[in-house]
Length: 64
Image 1 (tube, rainbow, N blue to C red):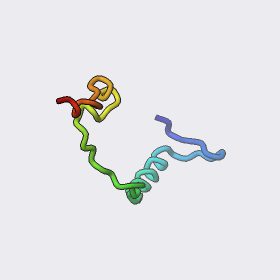
Image 2: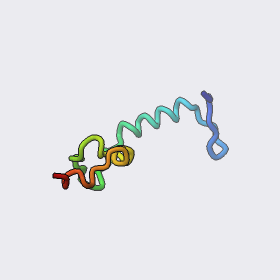
Image 3: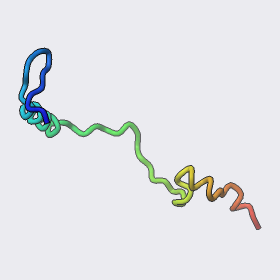
Image 4: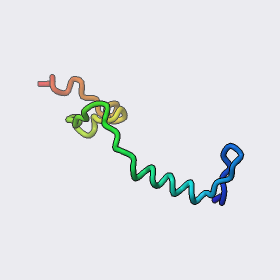
């Protein structure tokens, strides 16, 4: 790990940069979600593309 970092021709101690970053992370507010998350009600095998290809179920409910 470097002891110093050079920004715009000035040298800063790396430990000071890390301390500033830790402070920023503690102060940061949680970001709101863009939309409401909904639970996936599909069976586990149908939740991924690979599962849907391996076990197609398009016509399973129509069989007598």
